[in-house]
Image 1 (cartoon, protein in one colour):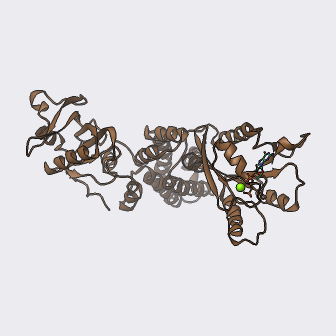
Image 2: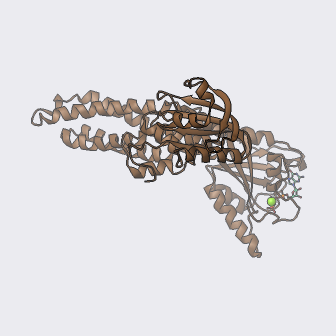
Length: 451
Ligand SMILES: Nc1nc2c(ncn2[C@@H]2O[C@H](COP(=O)(O)OP(=O)(O)OP(=O)(O)O)[C@@H](O)[C@H]2O)c(=O)[nH]1
Ligand SMILES: [Mg+2]
């Protein structure tokens, strides 16, 4: 465990903005000594009272040689009304790495300790300011790569998912209490139990947990984006289409079949979701070893992709090999009939007519991808992004299902209660009401210093 044990009274400090050059930089100080430490370097607080949540401008003076370290704005957060729930101070200084480092060194020399990665958020958790789901949301919000995933993280940070979860916990606790009450009457008729109420609640919890588990895949898409692979025979215009979709010269285009050998990647944001296009080597049997490796790679990335754009040259006959490839990826394949500028009549219902050369159909491809995003996210914002949470919800769901079937079989209440308690434990672990060092390490190891 990398955090100090409970009852850690150290006052911690760190630069919380990204280390580097910027307009301003913010240092955080948290712990019981925060205010007394800042007083030693911020003479303004001798003249005026440090009030909670009131920003004060002034010089920060070295306690050793009385040189001015910087002109700063100091904001105290007192009486537990802070991010960490402890006495805290934020110092906004000029965004120079040298200035920030000097202030940090000064705070350390006055008795603060450098914070560990994620320690501010950890303290917020320990002090009951946030639960574990919200702590994870802090990280996913900072790391989110699209507006949609930022929205979802923010909703979790504000307690949306935690609230839903506590309703489920209440239901399970109610059921458990009823089961436990009836354990004492073991020889009574099993119907003394409120079976109907129990079944109803279990069903409700089970449905919601299923929804959470399903939403994880959607959440994964929101945070990591949608991977779309462009596949087809050589020379059909895959690289040209990539360039047209990105509106930039990303991949090399020539009229020589076998131009692209390695996967070429380009990103586009659509509906707030990051789309990663992968242009691949044209599929054919090649005597060239490098090209052959590229071809095998094309197939393997297509296998892992969320969606395959299969490109056909609409001036050519479709080969059996192409039919097989489209068949292989059916379920996630969209067919593009490229080079339609060379056709005199277009009447295929087989795919979308596009032309990388004239730009025809490029908007239709984007519309199709937008539809795909809509379909996958269904405008839902109760989305689970963290795999840790998804795993626990999955366990809870299985346990609740098992409980439900035991109830249906009218098994003994203590047996049922045993199963249910494991499900409840999984939910308690997801929000951090039950935790051990391993859980903490898993959650906070991804944070960096200052968070
Ligand atoms: N007329 C016309 N020519 C196109 C179109 N798209 C691509 N081409 C031409 O087709 C040839 C092959 O284009 P690429 O984009 O390199 O094809 P590719 O599928 O990436 O080929 P490989 O990398 O070899 O697999 C080039 O000469 C392009 O200019 C199109 O929509 N219309
Ligand atoms: Mg190419």
